[in-house]
Length: 355
View 1 (tube, rainbow, N blue to C red):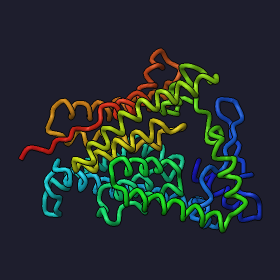
View 2 (view 1 turned 45 degrees about the vertical axis):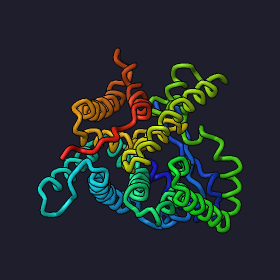
View 3 (view 1 turned 180 degrees about the vertical axis):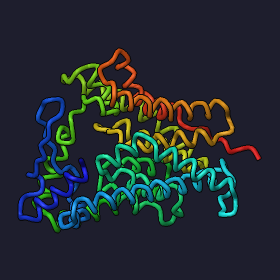
View 4 (view 1 turned 30 degrees about the vertical axis):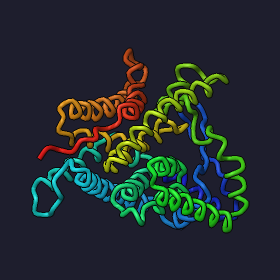
């Protein structure tokens, strides 16, 4: 759906219309729903070619690109685990390398986030791949700009700017911030009216992305909205819980980063971004899968069990939500939101594999 919406929005703007006036209507559970273009103007600059591309070939290319991105993310994770001392150095001649990469790729490919990514045509997977590579594999002297650019496309990676600062990666954090501002200014120069509307109004309208109380939203705000309703106190409860979870998660992430566990630190920070974001749909949640795969790489039986539990429960609950949303076990569909928060609260082990 999202790929279709983005393509239609680009065509709408190409015809001379105001981009953020675009409205896509559809029916869900008998009720009329509306969605619009929700990304910053800089993202619109990158997505402009969609307006002139046929829809079916675009979907085929998108599917192929998704498979490639899954494989690249698996390779990046295995390399990141090696840099932490959790796995041997990857080599093409090592059967263990191929087993690890293919195992991670399969786990990612059959997951609910990837399924959602393919069904709706999202950009989340590409952004997670870019941020992970920047945080973990890019040398420190070049780290930061990739994350800043991805944040200009979709704002969630801005969480990593704060993470870099707290981890005392000052220059990387500065490069990320400068890159974000530069891309946003470029969007403002080319699309001034759209930029003024987005930064001045639409950014502060989370309902444009979707109702936070919807079952598919597994952020802290989502679970608080479903439990406490949508009264004025909901925001205060959400902010209090988000601050608590954020402090604990950032403490874990910074500690891991300073100890040289860059991959684990980035994954905990990624889980935090999912938890505190107002909207966290299933196709956003790749950070949790990478977290679980990292836990599986631990030489601790307790952590491996935790990793397996995340993969099973996380995917099973989303499938249950899809195929049996109104059954007696409906409360269990809140489990993914609890899992995301738990990943933030428990962190990851700062322990290298025994030789």
